[in-house]
Image 1 (cartoon, rainbow, N blue to C red):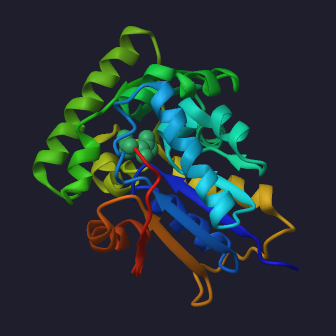
Image 2: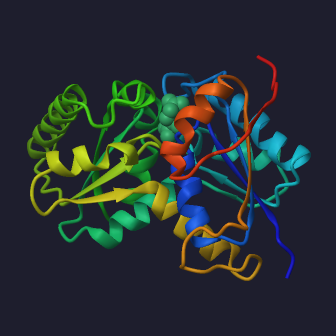
Image 3: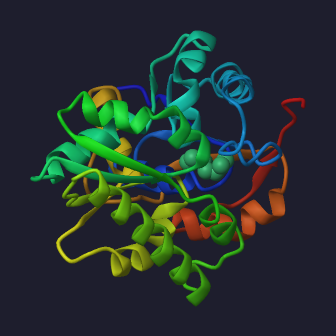
Length: 274
Ligand code: DGL
C-alpha cells in the first residue's frame, strides 16, 4: 500500500486541532499542513476573498506538496469556499461542516442544535443548512471575540470564561425565543476546541459538545479507508508532518504545539501573494 499525502488547510494554525485528530486516526499517513497566517482571519472576510485565498492555498498543497486528498480544517473556508476549492484542484476535498452536522445528528435527541462559529460561517448559514438536511433545527451564533482570545493564548482565562458565558446565554435566549430545546452544541470553528473545558463548564447540564475537528477526522478516515493504513492507537513517531505558513512562522512554532498536542517542529515560510 502506498502512503498518500493528505493536505490539511486552515486560515491559521487553529486547524492543527484537526490535524491532531487526523494523526491519531491515521498515524501512518504523510501530512502537509498549510496555515494561511498572512491572511488570517478569514472569518471577517467576504465569500469572494475567502474563496480566492482558499483556492490558492489548496493549489499549493496539491501542486507543490503532492497532496492526494485535502481536508479543509477551516470552518469558514469549508462554509464559503468548498465549491471553489473543489474546482481549483483535481483531488477529493473534505470540509468540516458536513461531518460536524452528522455528528450533531447522532448526538441530539431533541433535534435542536446550537452552533457557534465565525461571522462569515454564520452569515453563510452552512451549518443551519447541513443540520436542516439531517432533520435538525439549528440556531447559529457568531462569537468573533473567541479567535483573538485563543490566538492570545487566553484559553483558560477568566475574561474568556466570562465572554463564553455571555455568548452562550444570548444563544440560549434566542433558541428559547424560537421554541427550541437544544441538547447539542457544535464548535464550528478551528479555535474553539481549545476552549472546550470552558465551554463545557458554561453549557447547561446534559448538553453535548461536538468538536467539528474530531468529526471531520473521523469522516476523513472513512473517506481515505483503504488508501492509508488507519489505526486507533494514536500518533506514532513515524507520522510525517510538514507545516507551512504564509507569515508569523515563529508564532506558529511557539503556539502551534498547543493546538497539535506535540511539537510542530520547523515551519516553512511560503508566499502565496496578496
Ligand atoms: N479557521 C477559522 C474557522 O475555523 C477561524 C479563524 C479565522 O477566522 O480565520 O472558521
